[in-house]
Figure 1: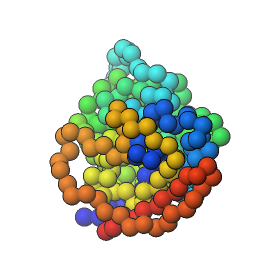
Figure 2: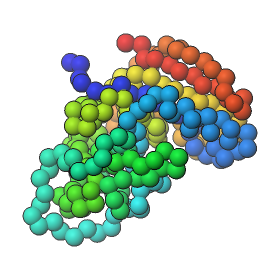
Figure 3: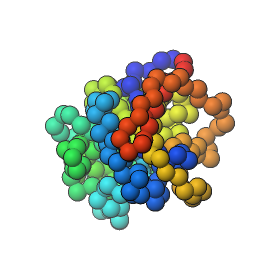
Length: 238
């Protein structure tokens, strides 16, 4: 059954060996290409960017500690906080660990985005009450693990998001890939490699996900960009 969902692109900055983190990102030879990666985000004109909890730890206001007991407990229905329309940041946070001072996150050079927490049924009512106090929207998608089709459906129907970007880490990228939900993969590749086996790749499947045949894509474009980088665009074969 086809679900109503936004167009989804996975847009990533990578090394020659397919890594998305590590020392290569700040290497002088990679910086011009990393700047191109940031500039090319606007090509897709996405209203929302989806990040995994590990990635969002670097952007959130820390982690929540012990929360006061909410009395009464809030409704577990999805919550759309009052906010200005425009841009959204979606934090995939299955256990409810991220802290937010406000319902907006300010990005250097990209303006501010309203925060939507993507939760599972594991999250406590105390955390839901906390998000409401902070002015953060939230949706529940899945009991223990993220239900990616349901999340995308809610982003489209509750927030009117027509185009969304998933931008890491490797586990969250792979979760959407697993369900054939990624319409396009956009890779901006820097001309550097270090062979670090500890670094994360674009797609890394979580252990609880079942094996599946590799997802197949068709090459849409290959463009040389500043700094000897390469921009590759692939569309999902359906």
